[in-house]
Each structure stands twice: as structure tokens, then as C-alpha cells.
Length: 483
Image (cartoon, rainbow, N blue to C red):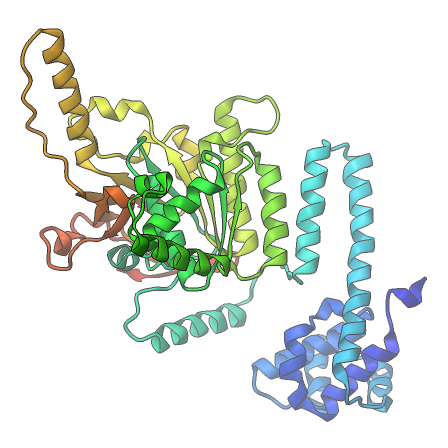
């Protein structure tokens, strides 16, 4: 039984190979971590090797010995066994064998964990399933968790971040590309581990906005997971084809196109056949089901860089608790999942009807339905606002009132193919708040950047709430100087 869980001879051979050919360590350290070694003394030696590499010191017998003496973990007998082991040339096969046995040990530990939460703690089955899936994902992804990061580790990560920013030159994009130049400038993109909320009243175009971002990413060859709870996948594809081909959505729905448009559509279809877009349009899903599906998909397709949920309030809760508690569980679950999968999750959200009774109908944070937990958990909250939606609605109300009074109605409203739109950054944990100007092309249900020198573009940073920026490194946040 134990032979299936570890092989000390293989562990000694790999460590011996590193001692005699230290240049191998760079490649091996990508695949191996200390927990892959069964013997604690072997783990200590591997940790010492890692420390020496980080300090740019030789990885040899004397320096390893010195490093282990510092922490009082030097075992002379184990070191002699390693030095007497034969170095190997085909390290990959040995590493694979050690990783396989390490995985089996983790799985055996997981079976004990399952018994504990199922029998001893008597947790509900849904919670047990979630725990098991999370642990399995961590095991398969070789996730390393620790209570603290020490100063050398944080210093190294911060310097790597600064160096990466220097190499990018003047690029403002740090996270996932939003598809909009001014929005990228304000947010630096959607960061890994971020929960992004895009909120609006019905008909404002929140789905259209996120689909433009999705289209931009798949054109770049990036992977996207889309949970469409409101509309079937075919309708999403129609909108994407309209965005890509500039064929009005109504014409696509009716198949009413000229030969040139048909050719354009077939070209777009050919491109979409190779796109890394995955859509789940089940229509009803709870946070546990979404977690399970997204973990599995991310495991199968590591190239997925963002997940979208359209929209948050349609998600069903777990259990029979109050709806506000369900939404709180959903928003917190999405935030934790974004951190776990190390990618942004974008969730669309409805706004309360109450804002329409105000003179200024631009949304604010308190307008989000069940806003308390969502506002707390979100890293970025964006509001979509188009004044023309309300102008048109008011015109229709005046027309109805005139007809009821038997009066002639002369419309003063001019419907435009392109309307001004605002993206209001209501919250940004690591950056400024403010407004970004876009243009909404109604027939194509497409948002585009406003013309560079149009009125208002240069005022995108007005009313910015400057604050200290934070840079996210795993579970740690490092404060940076004010923007």
C-alpha cells in the first residue's frame, strides 16, 4: 500500500541530480513543490534549495548544509543518502512519478476530510459537494496555500510587478481588456480575482456592453465563460454576429440580408467556430452549481480569462433563507470564486425602480437591488446610463396623455441611430471613480468609444475620487501612493 504513496529512492535521485547539476533546478521548480516529497527531511532540503536559488547562491552540498543549520533541520544521514544516490538524466519521468504519488496522498487525505465533514460535522450534502470540488480543484491545480507570506516573498513579488509595468512602457492595461480605451485608462482593465458588477435599469444595454467586451476578448483569442440566465445562447450569438459584421440585429433575426451581408456573416461564423467561447444557458442556477461548472470548465480550458453572469438577481439561492441573505451568499461566493480561479468574474445586476422618480436618473450605489452585500463584495461597480432612454419614455407618456385628452400630439423627439452613453464607475477598490463617455449604436446593439476629440471625452476624469491604489498579490494587498 505504501509503495503506491511514495518512492524515497526517486526522491533521493531527483535531489541528487539537482546537487550535481544545479542548472536543472529552474526547470524542476516549475513542476515540483515541497509537498510532492514524502519524507520531511527531503522537503526541508528542497525548501533550502529554493531559498538558495532566490538568493542567487550556489545550490551545492555546503550551502544546503549551511541553510539547513540555520533552521536546525540538517540531517547528516539523509544528506549522505542523497549524495550517494545516482544522478539521473531523465528527470521528467521521475518527476511525473513523484507527482503521481503526491496526488494519491492528497486524494487519500481528501477521503478523510469527506468522512469528517459528512459524518462527524453532519454538514448538508450541498456544502460537502462544494468542499470536495474545491479541494479537488486545488489538488489538480497544485495550489499552494499558506497562512502568511514573508517579507522577502512580498518584496520579490512587488519588484516583479514593478518590472512588468516598466516593460509595458506607456500601456495602461494591467488586467483583462474591457474593449474600451477610456474605460481601460480609468480601471487598468478587470484584474485577476476581481468581482465586477455592471448594473443598469432595463433597456440601458448592460448585456450589450458586456458582449462588446466578450467579443473583443474572443477576437484576441482569449477564453470566455458566459452564464446566460436570461436569454438562450442563440440570441447571444446573434448579438455577437451583429457586433462583428455591423449588420443590424433585426435583419439578422429575419435573415433579411443582401449577398454582401451574407458573405460577411459566413466569414464571422467561420471565425466564431474557432473562438474559445463557452455558454451555459440553463436559465436557472445556484451558486454551488455555478462554482462546480466553472471550476470544471477552467480545469479543462485553462485559457479562460474571464467569466460573465447575466444576471445576478436571476440566480437562485441555496436553502429557504431570506432573499437578501441569498443574494449576500451569491455575491460573496462569486468574489471567493474569482479569487480561487484567479480571474475576473463579471456579474450583471438590476437596479431598483426608485431611481426613476428622481430628476437626475443617473444611478448610484444605493440603487442596486439588495445592494448591501453586492456593494461590499464588488471590486468594481459600473453603471450603464443613456439619457435618450428616458427622453423616449417621457415622449411616449406625453403622447399617451395627449391622446387621452383628445388633443393632437406633435412629437419633438428625434430618434438617433447613435446615442451618447455614460459608464459611471461607482466603486473601484483599487482606483478612481468617475465617468467614461461611450456611443451606443442602436441598430447594432453596440457600444463604441466616443470620438477622441468629441465634447466630454477630455472630462472623463472629472469628479475623480482619488485614493490610495492597491495592488493585489494572491491573498495580500499592497498599498501604493495616491493616484
